[in-house]
Length: 225
Image (cartoon, rainbow, N blue to C red; front, side, top):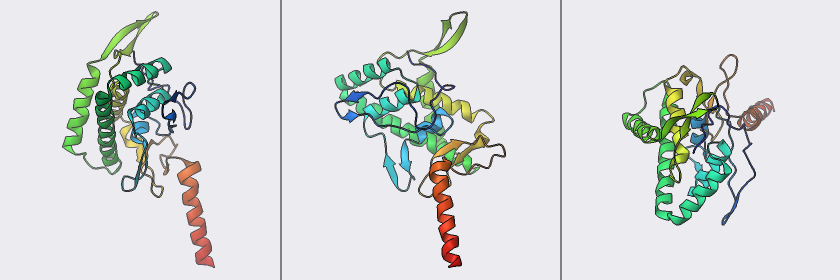
């Protein structure tokens, strides 16, 4: 079972459960400041697309992101890690597909921030991923109500299914107009603008925002001198 965590994602710098140890040491730690699951996944590439710093270097990193994002339990993460060790070729494909999907999602939302239409091939790719993901989505009973539930077992691409659903839900809602791209130097991260007047410029005021303020300050000081 994959849990639907779109409403309960961890905030910036936080993750659920204790870090898991593995053969490569402690897992990669991710940040969650996008405001929506799909945007957080798009932000697993550090820096800008022109000068990128990849965070998803192995399938283990995909699992780590899913666990920290709340779409996998610790037990799910261990099961997928073990499955990947048994099926390295499948794990390599799942990693490549996850990175390709991430870039597809990024290009679609980046186009939206520039008020232009996305590439048709990117939309086709997202819709194909959506069809694959929704084949595993079902309604299950929960006490006196019902809830969505992902049925996956050891499917190595299960981490991205909630991401695809999140991307589709944002695109068809009125939230799309509030997706922004960070204005920081060498940062292309996407975020959902929750500011009152919809004027937020940076993915994080403590990081990109403060650096931009510092650059303006020193520029004014140099010009004044």
